[in-house]
Structures are given as structure tokens and as C-alpha cells.
Image (tube, rainbow, N blue to C red; front, side, top):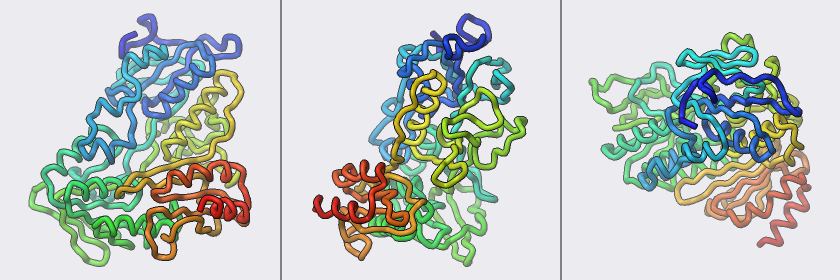
Length: 423
């Protein structure tokens, strides 16, 4: 099979309805992690029909976490982050349509940017997100969502002495860490009073803030850009904050979250403001025969009583397994425990579970919450008396022991008993 084309036999790919309970042709729109994992899980679940994979970038599916770390640092080159090249896709019997963007969805078919149309019995949307932009943001300010953007930022950092990071989330912190390792002066501005508080809460978010400052970063919280200033046509950056402070840097990156890539679905009549609303098996509500996975998908969440969208790497993998088995008519996988990690300033930050459900925290290991070292700190999150999440800083061995406890939702006493037994 070639890398591009109109269909399997030189014509448009058209499904003719389910055979033995399975569709004949599954079309996956989005060739990132979620799209690729869906194809892999379809084959693992015994699906024998056609699979097509549409990707806007002309590149084979690649891994995005290294973009802000190993690749940005220059330790890895692009070929190392490829998840499956052309041979790997051939092994899966997946027909790729790379460098081609989906522009419209109609029942049972997707129109592509080259004017062709692909027909399918089942469609999976995994188009991910695009970087949000700030009002008045100059074009030469960097964002980091794609390989090309990572390489452009890497080239810029090689010639720079200072970096401004707008947005103190995980991507911003990882870029700041990489830049500090390269010897740059780094300033991070964050609108919230405590960085990472939306994801981790104030107490644990403050530990991430300490990693920044202890790593030599100038961190300004409660700081909002009011306007970007003219730098006389150079690639340098100047921003004026709401309090009148001016910050200058050789290079800047804006990391203020992502917007689901759903503009091509505007004609469906769905509310796309926060992703595609799905049931708990990934079926898109209001679109027959369509599923969604990954950053773009807001699945029904029984814990919160409404749709919930997550942009974590493991979430895309977990949802792909559920969707693939639903399409293939196989038994669903066991429920997964959410997991997230971030590498910065020499530590691996790990999170298991759902901290947004918690109403209190529980120190389990280390002294970070009381002002001691961040490294080795492990914190539990409780909803009432139930353990719903655990976060750790440079404590991978300990974190691994809490996965089953979070899955079971053990009580405070059992969580503390485990902490005591682990020392």
C-alpha cells in the first residue's frame, strides 16, 4: 500500500454495511496518538475490515511528549519520535492519507482537502487540539503542538539568551526546564495566583511552582499580558503586563492551552465549544456511526455527571481501546485509572487518578507540603474519605504502589497504612 491515494483499489473507499457485526471500513480522522492507537486496537480486537487513517501533517504518526523535552533539547532527532512509519502502517493494513485535511463530515463520508471523499461504515474523530492564541499575539511568538513548531523553537533557542514563557502549565514548565538546561534566562508569567492549580490544586501546584523557581526561573504569578509591544521589526519580544511591567526576551512561547480542532464540523449543528460530546463508549451524540477519542472528545463522566474532556497522553490510549472494541463488537476493556506525567528540572512528576474530584489532600511521603524538599513528596487526594488521586515528585517507585489503591477508592486509613508500610 502506498502512503496516499483515493482508495484501496484506485477508487473512493466505500463501506457497504456491517459484515458479521463488524463494519467493512473504519475511517479514522487524525493521525496522532489517538488515531494510531485506535487502528492498533481495532486489529488487536480482531477487526479484519479496511482501516483508513487521515492526517493533516505529511508525517507518519509521532509521539508528542518528547517535543518539549528530548527533541527540544537536541538529544533526540525527529526519526526517534515516530510511532509507526510506512512499514508499520503496512503491518497493520492501514491505508494512510497523510498531508490531507478533513474539511467536511456528512453521514457515512468525509470530504478531504484534495477534493476527494472517503466513505465508511464507522468514523473515528481524533483530530486533537490547536494552540490557543492571545489577542494581538505577534506571529513570531512560538507555540508547541507539532514537530515543525518544536524544531522552529529549538532553532530559535540555539541563538537566544533569554526566553519568555506565557502560561505556567505543564508544556510551559517543560520548555522552561529545557531552556534553563541550555543556559537561557527564563521568565514564566502565569495568570493564576498559583501555577498548575487547575490541574493539581493550590497545595500541589505550589510544589510545581517551587520547581520552577528553584530551577532558576523567574516566575511571575497573577500576571496577565495587557499588550505586546513593537520591537522595531526584530524577532525579539516585549510584553506589557496588566500592572504596567515590561518584560523583554529574545524568544517567547505561548502555552495557554488548546482548542479542539473541530472547525471542519461547523456544518453539523453540534455545540463544539468544548469538544465532541460523547457517551461513555465514545459515540458522538448527534452523529450516527461516529466516535471520538483523545483531546477532542468530551465523554460522559459518571463521577461529574456530565461530559469531561482530558488532554492527557494516556487518556487517548485508554479511549482508543474502548472505541476500537465497541466498533469491533468485542468485550470492553477493564476501566483504566487516569495517569499523567511530566519531566522537568530533573524530576518526574506523576499523577494517578482524578484530583479534580477531591476536596482535601493527604501528605503520604516527603516533606514538600511543609516546606521541605520537593523531591520524594507524594500527596494523596481525598473526596470525602475516598482516595481519588495520588501525585508524586521524583517518587516513581512509591507512586506505582498506589495505582491499585486509587482504582479501588480506598479510605484515608488504608492510604495512610500503605504510606507507613512503604516508609
